[in-house]
Amino acid sequence: MTVFKEAGQLLRIFIGEANKYDRMPLYEWIVQQARSQGMAGATVLRGIQGFGANSLIHTTKILRLSEDLPVVVEIIDTKEKIESFLQTIDHAITEGIVTVEKAQVRMYRAGGKKDG
Image 1 (cartoon, rainbow, N blue to C red):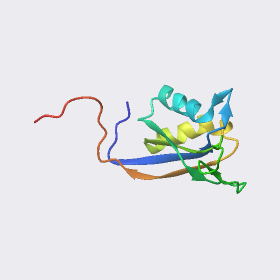
Image 2 (cartoon, one colour; image 1 turned 90 degrees about the horizontal axis):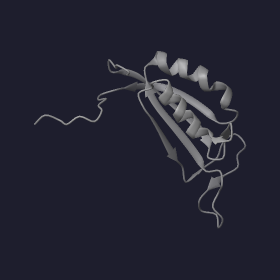
Image 3 (cartoon, rainbow, N blue to C red; image 1 turned 30 degrees about the vertical axis):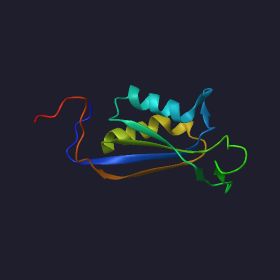
Image 4 (cartoon, rainbow, N blue to C red; image 1 turned 135 degrees about the vertical axis):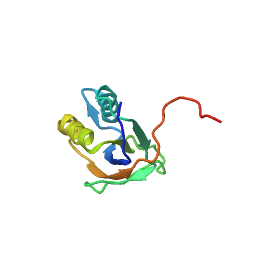
């Protein structure tokens, strides 16, 4: 389990819903890799509209639903674990953008009940 001392990093991976890795949705594969490497946590967010390097707009507003909506995978952990994780997933991300930024972790709790 990750132990934070308030300083962490936020990894954001911007990809398309249709991106695949080994016949699996790429976002799903990334989350599985994060879990297997003991990352603190991961969240997948599905966008309703966006565009990337190819400038094609993907949206739910068109009469037919887009089959490639934007997806953002967010992972927070220590700088060292984020850097190691990036090496693991680098080869699988053939299009999209990956950002890393500082994150101040104020709370990181699992399951237990609060006192009081």
